[in-house]
Length: 176
Image (cartoon, rainbow, N blue to C red):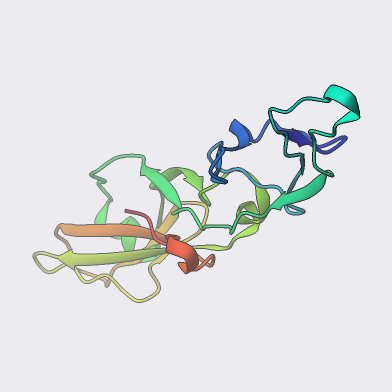
């Protein structure tokens, strides 16, 4: 039998650990499960002989600790719109637009919530439009767009979001 150690909260499991007769350990955790000290259980092996004539049918209790490797989940965001219009003179001075919302570091629990986020903006201007290097997309989703004087036109831009969590153990650090 596999039973949680005293005081251990099993709410992070969809299926509690169990050991089949051939010794296979099975369990399923909830998404984003995070328990830094591991999940602690006590395991006892029982046979079918029973306790007849003072027999012992249970092994000594053995602790089982399950540690999960943390995997970085990709950050995400939503664009507030897919097209923005800006007055030519406003962009020369630096137009401010809220272009991203619902910005997430990935998993809503554990150390992932402390990750730093960086947006990348890549634009292909058309016409005479010249977007200057001072153009910045801040981590809060605010775009400061600065264009060269006397230029105008349209631009197709792509936006992505990256965190500093890495890709170890199959993780993802960039929005899709």
